[in-house]
Length: 402
Ligand SMILES: [Zn+2]
Image (cartoon, rainbow, N blue to C red; front, side, top):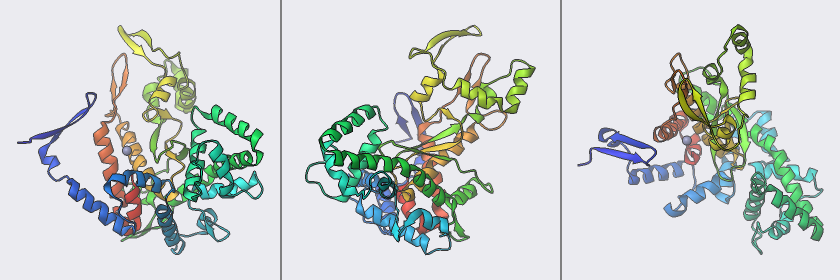
């Protein structure tokens, strides 16, 4: 007889009472749920084997059906009262749709090369081994161009720039087109943040109580009148990924303690900001220091190195969501909400006089990590609940939720 389910690795382990597990949906139920959602969102059903890959391509605006669905959703918004002049300014240009960063890039790149066209980058992308010979499909060119731009954010950037310089000596026209495309992507990032911000804050979702914005639905779920929108920080992860970044402010009262009157006064008047600015980049090589604190020997890693090793759990200046800018803004909405739910959960764990996430002793302050299974399940469930009142109008969002 099964009494409980134990999940996890050697590092984490969860015991879930069978009574909790019983109401969980089995795989046939999940499959049914997926098919119902796909029908509601008017998209085709992907075979199980290729489902994750297709979902990724779809979120990244790299498959035709995904682009058609995104366009149909924007079309619906356009014919709703939510479509203000800002919406038209962001998503339309000369009667054509700007669905995502790929489209926005096409409007920015001509600032760098007169007459720029996506097809003009194909020979350059081939020479740089980003595109197979004979491929002329625009989705494939788009994907290759985006991949090159994404790789520029990695450690290979110097190698890539050198390869483009080499190409320029052989084929100046191709190199110019590739450079214009890369500059176009760079400039399109601000468009992308604006587009996502519009979709998060304007009432285009139909609910029984009237039109609501995703941000309003978030506030309703959390039982507050409104919630400040976390900063949208566009990233180049190379996949439809996102992660929350919590402001240092929740930790500052525990992290920075004034030793005397002047220090306490300074911290009260936003000295915490300056303290965080001085503390967070501190690094002492790659080896942690062994130090003695209050009679205990402890191994201490530098904050600067922790920020790099644990980007998802480290702190930033402001509450923010770091999110892949290659995602179509429509698909990014649900991913953003998912991370926003993580963020608020983390805020709540650090709130109050005795935060549940902190263990304080005379010699150290311990930040308890969230349980990965529970926090992931919570964020998935919370995002479903946030979007539930929007029913059919949010079905594509629920389908693309990571
Ligand atoms: Zn998550």
